[in-house]
Picture 1 (cartoon, rainbow, N blue to C red):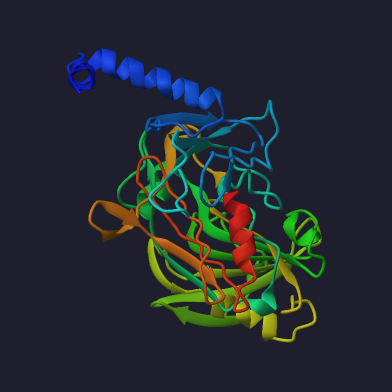
Picture 2: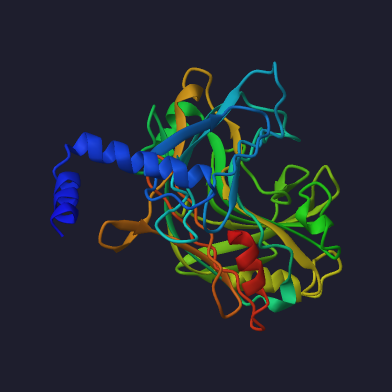
Length: 362
């Protein structure tokens, strides 16, 4: 007993540095032998991409996301640039299993041609969930607050007049969805038959949804709907890929929103119009971001977007983006400077998404 006591005492009496050295040696052995580590690396790795298109997929134990600068209307060598910034937790864990990494974006573009004004759609995209048949969906609940500003850091408030007057800025803030009767094509943004967008902000005179003007004349909305005190109007037209684009645009800049967006999707699915999608179609893609059109040359490099969450819990700032079928699968968005989170909750009444959820966590 005396020897054992001395050994224990000796170990406890070791200087902290020596103790940690021993423990870290044990940790390295466990990792090298395929065992789980004793300690988690709680540091954050900062990653960014200024590529035309890139897939930043932060390692996670929960819901997987892809962040993409998506400069689809810009080519290397042309004027302008965009960079997306992502903070990755090295322990692969976030506030919840569906919390996404912090992210932000800065961009810089001249005004483009009238028929092709968009340079990029930097966004965060939900992975390992779609395709889902629309007939099985019944909710898209979203709760968020976002900010757009001019400066090195994202602003805590959005002053649209300043963005337009100071920077001659043109951009939107939008949710983007693609659908098709073919579940494979539904997941390909250039091949899907239909695109459904929900715009929460339309900033600048050049920022217009397809179908808003015909022969330079403004067209009335096909339909209007109010959700969470926000009035949306619907417009429709074909894009350059001959895809049918249906855009619900808020009449006012909506920096805060909390409500169920499903009625907007459900309307276009049940309107029984010749060129509309139907509930037998598949939703194959869902993302959230900003379409970057243009800003004044002198200030373009200082355009930044950030998202700020509502506070639901002490020290935990969250907004929620839910698309559900009676259970839960919740992706989230955030920005690096104005911490934003949006949870996407996708579930099926038959429980079929539970398997998808397990695959997403792999």
